Image (cartoon, rainbow over all chains, first blue to last red; front, side, top):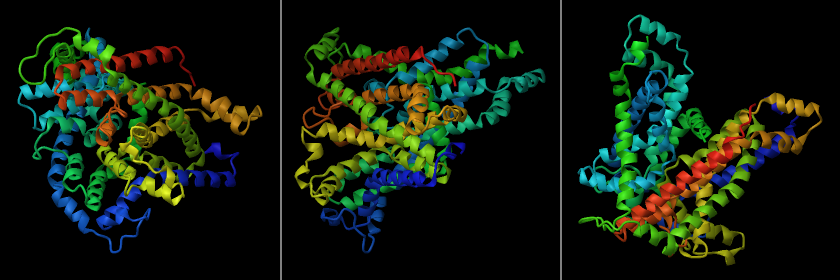
Length: 280
Length: 295
């Protein structure tokens, strides 16, 4: 706040205008999308840049919801994501503790091995994993997504957890051990509650990454039974090739969950992104 | 104390589940990829070992491979020289505006980053559409109709169109990282500089930018790796086309495997792709390691 001391009202107003204009520019494609999702399909061909939907065609959203199989894909997304996030949180807590607090010879080497994952591009495992999953008859199942999602989120999560657990004072654990507490009680009754900020960050970033993931889902799933939400958009583009309004409605619906989560958990997302970036 | 913390069984129990899943889904596949890359496998039947044949072919004769790499470099340059200066400027603006506006703008600029890439990609396909797309309509509106294009369908404009989508979507990321960096610069430094008579732009060129250097470097590294890894947007908009005009490595190996059924060859590309990513990481860590600013 002190930064504003030499900063007068007029230049603040100028800044606000610049920021406002630029953010309108940045968000305009989305506004355009939502606008035409409420119009008649043919309206998009008109000369207008935006058009007041008169009356708004909510039927587009109804068709999108039903024919886009939104409820089914949504449930699949929820199953895959809840499982992935829970496992990532649990494993990163356990591994973080083992790396930071437990005494074993290979600790550093194994940690380095896990952090190596930060440098490996997901796409490089697409082909071999496809072959492996096919061999194990795992294609087209929830596992085909949960396993790679957990694996790829772990390095980042472990990185955050080791940093965080390292900053927790040892005193509590020491007295707990003297009182005869086992590791698992320490882990879940002392470390877990204290690590809440880090775990929330891990939850949010893992959720956003896996919820929006598409390529693995497209490669490892072949039937609508297991497909996740992004598929609604993809399926629709072919099926309703010329019905733009309904396509736009599907896209709006699919964008909504992540948008809501982001706006609700803004601070945590911001922290997660910046913490993740500091690692370099 | 020591006994509890060095119990081998507990350590194994804590580390093993995560370690197994990580090894199974990341490291083992990469090793398998190295083997498959040395075969002429089509995806079905038996792989036939051919040694380094694929790698030779890729490096010496595959023009699309090199074009994909060139496109990644162009995207990286666009990030570093176009997206980042704007992102840094806007991070400074947001930091300066303060109050409620600060948080609101920070939130707004990050919105494109949280929207599923399937949505943003299909949306941009519509925006670029020659018949009804917003881009051509805006050009008409500005009486610049002669600039109208088949943006994604034309060899001349496909790559730049894809680059624009990537810059649009990643802008919030770059901005947020700079913003976090700015927050880390202590206010006293500015005050000291003001006492020394520094004002306005000088304050930024003499204090902000130099002190932000570690963050700038991290952000550049992320951008370059991100450019190298580009796949989703390309896959969902041009699929690398027309021809190989907008091809990127990850998408190219995907096409080779699933459209041309050259599984072995695709795995060889995949291996080179991992090597490229590791090399960039290691290189940048080396370059940037020695100089760390203490605040």
